[in-house]
Amino acid sequence: MTKAELVEEVSRVSDLTKKHSEVIVDTVFQSIIDALHRGEKIELRGFGSFRLRKRESRKGRNPKTGDKVDVPPKSVPYFKPGKELKDLINQDPHGPVDDGSPLSPESPA
Image (tube, rainbow, N blue to C red):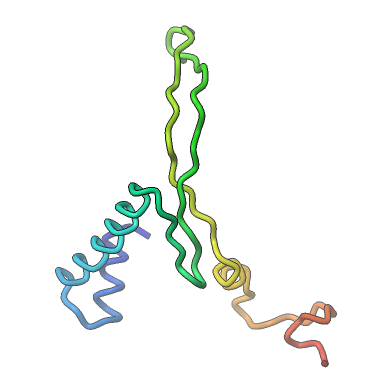
């Protein structure tokens, strides 16, 4: 899904104009970016969390020349999906399946 498709979906579901929906989507993205820039962790219950991971400096190689280069330390954004999101993605679209496990929704209690 592209950002434009996300804006379209927000507009459709919320009965807002595309322009208002775009402002909402942009604000959410910018808020996440700003919080990460400040070193904060973003936790969206039921969805997942965003945080920064530090990468140490290292020796790299220029693929064109083969020369060794110093790669400076940096921070990279990392997303960890929440349990609910993982469960929804792995859910059978045709309904629950009884696998015999005591935790299966179809198993007798």
